[in-house]
Image 1 (cartoon, one colour):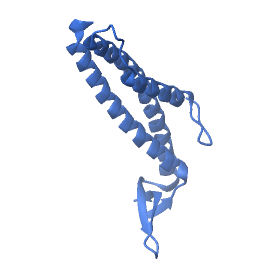
Image 2 (image 1 turned 180 degrees about the vertical axis):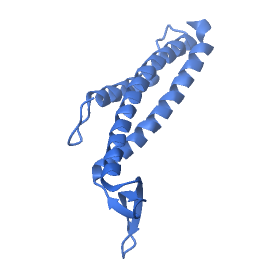
Image 3 (image 1 turned 60 degrees about the horizontal axis):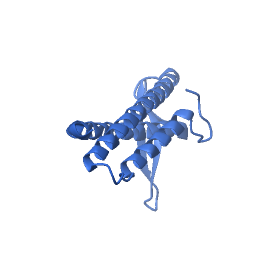
Image 4 (image 1 turned 60 degrees about the vertical axis):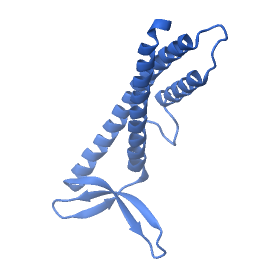
Length: 155
């Protein structure tokens, strides 16, 4: 996948958003007057299952890409500063407003915090969002499969 700059979405992200829109439309679509309700439910579940599987594949690829970027950044930080980990540091100012910073906390040779740029925070947030999306898509896939199997006799 290509590196995306300036907040632009990659083709995979656009395709994923399109699939999510299609899934939502498929769920909300009305039924035909001459069709049995359970037959219609079976067809909707089958279509949702197919779209969900495609969306899961794209989500998995995006997660893999984001993890690779994060791993590369961690390697670079370890090479530059030594052994440590990435964390979010919360700091309050005099007024009491809380600010959050992404830092690389070096443990060896001497403990110190290196403040990182916003790119790492964006990657971590995107990875978190994609993991939640994957979880919801798996849940939706399971529900669609159950409905499809339950209404198999009406297909």
